[in-house]
Image (cartoon, rainbow, N blue to C red; front, side, top):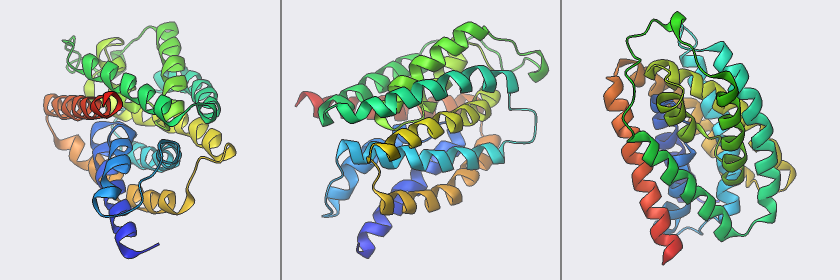
Length: 259
């Protein structure tokens, strides 16, 4: 393992985790394509889709808990939402991560591409303005939240994501949760989801430990910094940044799948 490898993997982990903390996603939506495409640009051996999904699953576990810790004060964590969506997504992510070992490389990429397109479309759907609602007055459809979280868990468990990039648009557009509460709460649900994803990937031998360890160190440093920046930014700007990132990665993945 040479210095170039360490620097490149650390940089991917740091950038992805910074954006993770800032935008309330686990970061796999960003790190999945970065791990696939950036190492070969530096003459390094490319990771397989299974390796990328395994590394992402373990790394997201640490990035999300670091982000939640940064948001622990201020009343942004909705405990009911965490319980209903967290329980369902944990079950789903266990199913998806175990099942992914039976899928081909191409199938894993196709699942990721489908998730990215759905998330991108949802981010551009007009949202009911909820940011002025007092945090204590926020309500949501509990059965719907649990069902959607279960589906997200299964799909995201396959690609080693914790589903944060889908949870954010679902909370904003379907459940009508205020933006800052969405960012903080989705990180907490993402952490729960990543437990299931990590267990499944580890048990089925899909984790490359050295790059995962490097990414974990990067995430513990970068996620809290991203969360601090996210607290100070305009919520509309945060939504636009996330929408553009998701749309860009969806386009890139599908170009590669189809060509």
